[in-house]
Image (tube, rainbow, N blue to C red; front, side, top):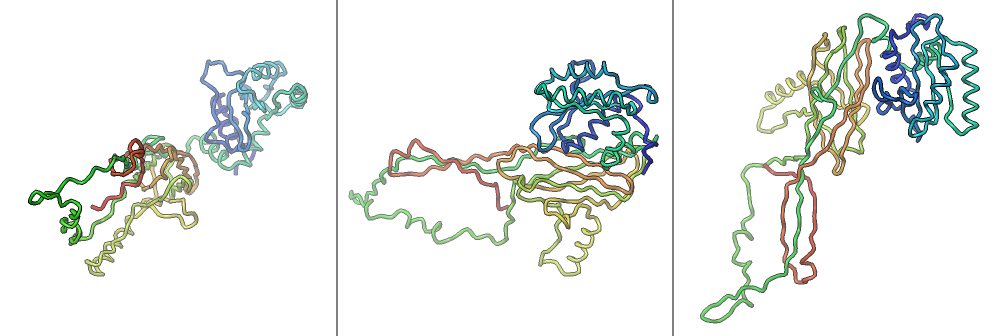
Length: 388
């Protein structure tokens, strides 16, 4: 690990703001929802970065003060007063307001921040905190993900970075298929007369008895039919090396909340047909093993892991693979969490899947004796599973 005194400050205020967003996203455990406030030139009410820490229900705000003169520049009392006044206009009201600065620690400004904090609390306003560069370095050393990200992207001329997407997109739409059956009711009509030699024999005839083919000859197929579940959705994943270093011995772990899906599948299935000899079947399965790259996790049921056969990913190179999933009925959004690990680089992220089901409409009519059911209907949604 690099000594704290060797961790250099960001070169500009934009990089400092990115660092604060990344660091406090990890501290607050809200890396997916923490945001930078607006864009350059817009009114920000003293807040550059904001988010709701895990377990809280109010916003926390950060004012990032990057200083060009890293040796002598300090945060002034005037700046503190101005930014606190602006932050009072942030909506919704803040619970805590944090000053972060690349300036070095200074006892005078730290004392002033403490005084403003007590003053604000007495007035029922947000708390006020200060983190100077030495404080930020301490926090960095305690947060491995942000530390590695900052060191790799800002400390060295060469930096490692990867991009994980749905084949180039951060969002992806899947379309599981269902059958939606609408049952309608109508009053049962009286049987049609069955006239023989001028006599109505309807009361003693059973028309179903004449449907002997349907009744006594079931639908028999000489060959087994496979059941196809049209809820299965393919999820394409793309990894691209967008950094300036070669990544080696890497893996990609990805997992989904179990409450959001019915099944996950690697898409790899071994040959088991009894029509093939053991030799041929074993050879086919051996080749499947050699080419396989997606596996079920040995530790978690809701986790899959991509282990490439080619374990070297050079600059600008890419890898493509996919897996399958059946989302639970009624779910509209699914977060796909991923964790990339290599020999000397680590990165995590989240992608979003939108679920837009497709319904095959069926109409079913039932004859009833009671007329009160005529205007009612029943809708049943079932998975589309078809024998083919």
